[in-house]
Image 1 (cartoon, rainbow, N blue to C red):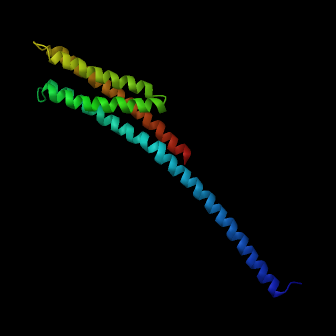
Image 2 (cartoon, rainbow, N blue to C red):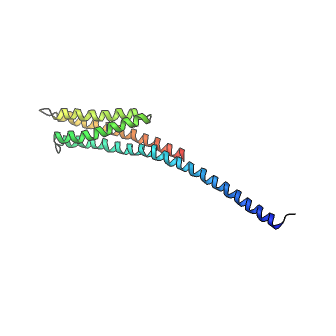
Length: 167
């Protein structure tokens, strides 16, 4: 026969055991959340940021090419604007190539777009200018940028799949 004192003590001990179990469970879940957040902060968000920055750099290169072709941008302005986009795109594409299977393809596509700009500069700096060749090259640059954007979309899908798999 249990006394009231024993019953109260047993109740407190059960409550204490439950509190310890709950604390351990919350701590374990907190560690998992911390790990997931750190993974997103250190790996996933930089990938997404790089993909967005690459889109901007590719667009900047193509815009500079069109402005140069339309003579709204002189050669020095083109070289300055295009070089900024080229440097950013090649650096970011190289970083993504080191971390993704599609990155090597992307680096080649961004290099092709950079080469298009150099070729356009050569065409437009000659006298007389071969406007047909320049127009054809701009069409090729547009296709190269579109191919790069499709690869960027595939990379973004890979990142999204990684996020969904980890949550």
